[in-house]
Length: 90
Image 1 (cartoon, rainbow, N blue to C red):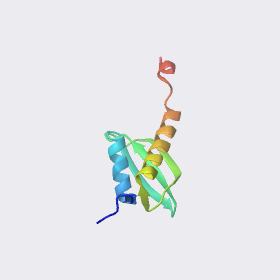
Image 2: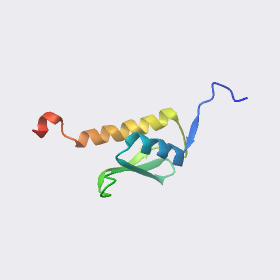
Image 3: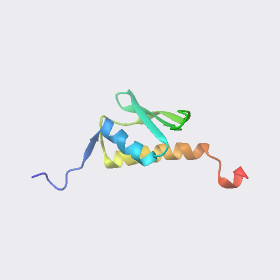
């Protein structure tokens, strides 16, 4: 029987799938660019146009739920820094 206290780990492809689901309907893809970092790209699914690409995000080939959440937050923070507040759009 598996101990209850064990931390679930996701392989890099499975972690990327979780991130795809999180960012849907925006397209998401990621590749490892070094043994311990990745490049993430958010794109428009209809046109394929890149909205934002972020290199050098720390990651591993096996990640916990918390590590996946940290990557999602980093991508969201970066995306938010490029989108002007609604008050500025008027």
